[in-house]
Length: 205
Image (cartoon, rainbow, N blue to C red; front, side, top):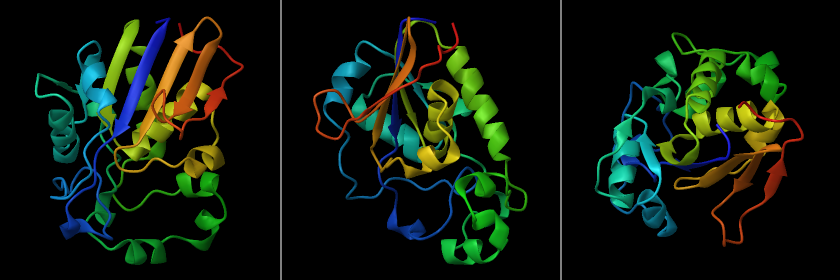
């Protein structure tokens, strides 16, 4: 699938009703009334790209603000199901995590909340979704978890690197795949918040 450009967009800010709470798939909040609008460049990209969105309400609402035309819902780009954590305050969730699981990002990814989807399963579905993309330009509205999984799958980022990346609400990560493999850019072209992350290994073809 080369050359390919995949623009991943995290949904906009969500309703204050879930502020401080864990939400993934089971708890499905809408957008905040005062959510900052998506970057205007995304509307232009939506006219020429193949468009997909997570089925979550917050992702579909973000997609509609970018462009009111049809979007393909794709569950591969859904956020992780956090199981029994969903709806609980994060402070209460963290209190249940064994101390050893907080030693490093890698250790945390090896811990699964009760009834949750394994992080490895998220990585597998995101990697499969990327492999299935045709050559061309793609615009995908998704969540922080799948974006981090995509950075690992394409550019070989380790847990520490993916968790250090800032992916705020409305944040954008651009993945490019060409002859020399994958590169990742945080932010849209022409903005000041971008940084290139080349991958020396070639990505899937």
